[in-house]
Amino acid sequence: LEKAKRPSVIWLSFQECTGCTESLTRSHSPSVESLIFDHISLDYHHTLQAAAGEAAEAAREAAMHENKGKYILVVDGSIPLGDPGYSTIAGISNLEMLKETAKDAAAIVAVGTCAAFGGLPQANPNPTGAVSVSDIIKDKPIINVSGCPPIPTVITGVLAHFLTFGSIPDLDQYNRPKVFYGQSIHDRCYRRPFYDKGKFAETFDDEGAKAGWCLYKLGCKGPMTYNACATAKWNQGTSWPVESGHGCLGCSEPRFWDAGGFYNAL
Ligand code: SF4
Ligand code: SF4
Ligand code: F3S
Image (cartoon, rainbow, N blue to C red):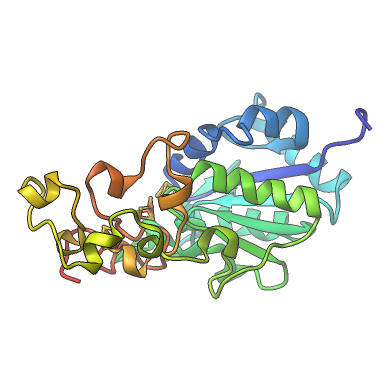
């Protein structure tokens, strides 16, 4: 069993900011080291792979060929349709590389709101014509792991589920795993008793804010945002946006950049 081949994972990064990969490296359960060294064969990943240039592309092609129909394709970042030249890797447009690599994948995991829904690059006026993975690939199972970035343990947890059970977890209407995205931030928020009693902070430094009252009137989008931040938390379970005094921006929802996440009226 120790010599059994680890499942191949090819990770493609398109129009993204590397925040999703930064998040991945912060996972503690399972840790990214355990994932890479014990559970998967990460055959292609711009930021984490040792190979560069032609050797890197050769590794991607070899992984696709040797694991045809069995590898997992992970994508972070959106895909520009405005002009193929807006974003290329090794002279190959993101659109072409996505189609080519998705063709023989067992499943696709779209990591981050950019890959899942278009995200930041798609924000008005969307200068590159950015679209999500599911706008292009229609014939493969796609798991959306949204968030800007997603919670580290949610990224590794989704990969671990697929590798352990070999199946797609139950998904919500946006193809996000219900186990992590099945409840709103608001429903799991420890400030909820203040919301229910009508106690709201009116400014970021008033007495209500200091007493930990609800941040709804300061623009918190927790009631319409589905993610696991309130229970899984960030930084190895240390804290999360609302616990550190700032409302949820709704970063795991479609169109959050244009939908009023940043201080616009509710
Ligand atoms: Fe960066 Fe957010 Fe897009 Fe991830 S989802 S690549 S963190 S902008
Ligand atoms: Fe809901 Fe936000 Fe208030 Fe928490 S702080 S109870 S998520 S509105
Ligand atoms: Fe994003 Fe809201 Fe969590 S902004 S990080 S979903 S608390």
